[in-house]
View 1 (cartoon, rainbow, N blue to C red):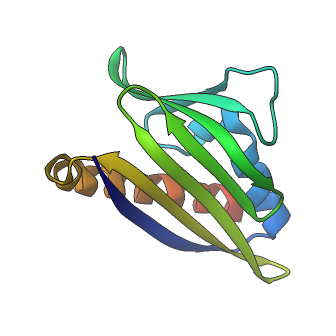
View 2 (view 1 turned 30 degrees about the vertical axis):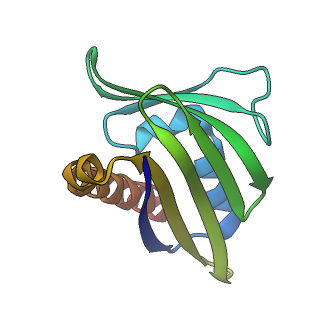
Length: 143
C-alpha cells in the first residue's frame, strides 16, 4: 500500500465559526456532500473519539467509509482516521480565518491504496469533493 495525497482549498464568505458548525454537524453533511449520508455511530458525538459512518452511493450501491476523529481543535482543525475495510488513511479539515467574514477551508486526504488504483479513482474523488465543497460554500453564503 502506498500513501496518496489529495487536497483542495476553498475560500468561503462566512465567519469561521459558521463554517466549523456546518462541518461539525456530522449528520447534516448529507445536505451538501454529494450522494452521501453521514451518521455518528459512537456515544461520543463531538471531539476526539467520535466515530462516524459515511455511505456514498445510490440505493445499496456505494461505498461505506468508517472514520474516527483523532484531532479536534474547534474552530480550526479536525483530523480523522479512516478505519474501514476498503478506505484506509487519514483526512483533515483545516479552517483559517481570513477576516471576520471570510474563511479559508483546506481539505486533504492521505489515502492508502496501490498507486494504480488511486490514479483510477482520483479524478472521480476529486470531482465529487469539489462539487460537495462548492455546495457547502453556496449553502453557507446564501444564509
